[in-house]
Image (tube, rainbow, N blue to C red):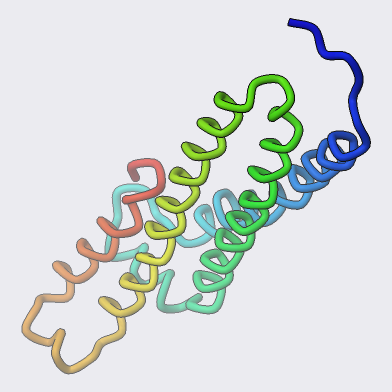
Length: 149
């Protein structure tokens, strides 16, 4: 199979692909590397919980950064589909579909990080649980999308 010429819409889509990769990397690195390294303490749920509550704004900024990266990822998926569609429409559609599913799952897991804040909030209805159990539950929720600490 040979490709005759690249039309202008493919060129624009290819530029969008490059730009979206560049735009998605900083917020993803900020959330995945900086925020995690500042807040998560290896094998210590209590210290991790204290860090999150002491730096709640940073934790929320990490969540927002992840969501920004995922929004940019949706644009990237559409642009990649536009670039690859002339080569093989069915494969491009399949790849876009699976990548959208992946991104949607990451969004759901990231939104679950708000449960960490809820569990660690100290609300009255949580007083029936010991603090160490709440901290472990919060750490379990954080570990749903990150490396095991």
